[in-house]
Length: 474
Ligand code: BGP
Image 1: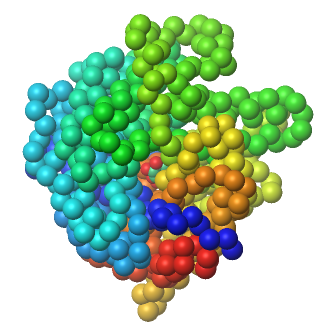
Image 2: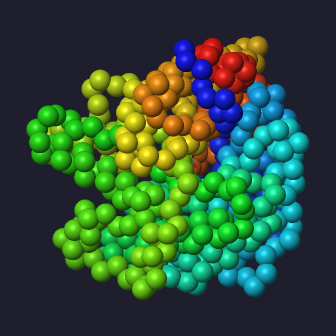
Image 3: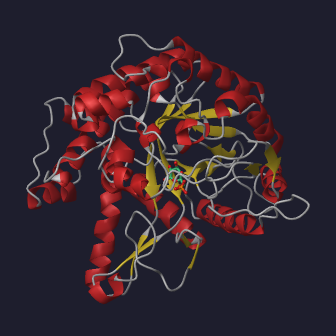
């Protein structure tokens, strides 16, 4: 096994709304995620069909308590430090800083909380890697402005991002603007707080919102570069190669188009302009995206420093209606790939696809890559002695890290790897606790019962050794 580059940023990734809980503590406002219950209704809302701007009596909202990272961050960070983490990717909750999103002044208690978290990380020599927006929008901005469909969000986001850069300029060097920015197309409420009117042209709304996020992202890059001298600001893509089901050129073309749905965002954020295929797509679909005069130059002059991405699974597509019936359980509408195994949630397990994806992204953008999410969501059942022998997780991670090192050998520049959910947390898609990714077990079930106690799984020591040996021992 080849050694990873010196200074490689090994670590883990969490998000505010899936870990912190304390959803109204110290002046925080409600965010979109706080309106997502568990169960079937969750998906209905995630697709853009909201029922209420208030949490409803009798519903269970997993973000409200999550794993209580808000009060237990010291204990959790100590465990990350014990594993030898070099980096922790985490997000800031917009509504902790600006409870309504449009407030004149930021909320000092919210700012102080992240100061404390960053200090704790730095004390342990862990580099904070911060996502500015990870699937949450202050509810007030959804209710009174229509969220990202409204250009005003660009200004609110710019103020929010600038506030963060000024406050944390001496503590945080690595930033990301929008988590999995392409998720906006698949789960519009999650990605952009979008709620649709009946009969509305959803494509039109989504791409207008996308334009606003792209402009907001460029403005954040601009501000960050001005405020923090050695800053690195990245984009973040939910990546994963799409395979054609057959070598029929129709299938191959469709696979290319599906990948372009995602690349579109990064093409703008990294290359600085709308690609020709996007312009054609707008024309063919009769979409009219409102842009302001200065947008073109802004996008051009403020591209990202690195490409952050998540990789869990590859996708497969076919133009044959019979084959298309074999859909697999994921938001990208992939069909089953007969060559690959699946997780309990139907996500394909494809380590080679990771190497392909990394190569493809590097070929396309020629910028450093940062793997900011990867992992296996699985049910963990403690053995009689209470131990969790999560060999399946070790197996998944081992194979993926090995393929990552192959990609590095291929010449791909990768600066770090933060696996998803180093500590069990709430699942973004299902809201469940039982879909676990952690090296650290959290005693809590799907209904919210449990002590919230933390304990080490078998994978804890495995990952510790990986980091200790800089990936030589897998
Ligand atoms: C990504 C998100 C994360 C995370 C992960 C795993 O889409 O950026 O927030 O949750 O997927 O997904 P899930 O939690 O649905 O298993």
